Image (cartoon, rainbow, N blue to C red; front, top):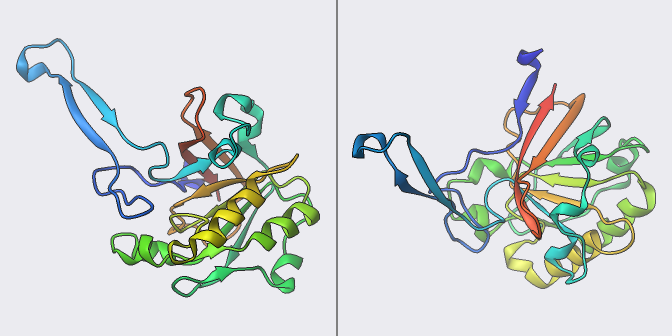
Length: 219
């Protein structure tokens, strides 16, 4: 069983790229055995949208749901679906009718693999990332009522060079009675076919508009 499980999340470190060009996590010393303490501990400092992370509705709506509003059952996914399509720098992505027709009606986690993760160590990854169109949010909500999450292998739903379109897209996906949450900056390098199932586990900190997530896929 273990051989069939892979991570779809990146490990975070001080080189983790952030939207807008920042860098990720700071691991600060706290207690140390070598300094005479009984155990080793660290202090972690990072923005809540660091690394592979989820956007909750509160990210773009003051009254939108925050982290603690989701039950444990929400985070298991039995009907994921993978779409693979390369993208250009700064592209605003829409799915074609042919691509939409491949998605099962009961999909619960839609994964978009563009290959843009290959540029994660470069400025291009955050400066020229593709993004999704607001219209796609409307289409997915209409056609796939059980869809809970859209995940992607680029740093944000918002293309950095098309930020106003990206803000509108975030509001479209995260708004309404049945928002589609967003997982950005996924590691899809080892994913080549649709997973059998997924578990997506956020940090359990109350009141967050977003959080790093650990995603484990059964392939």
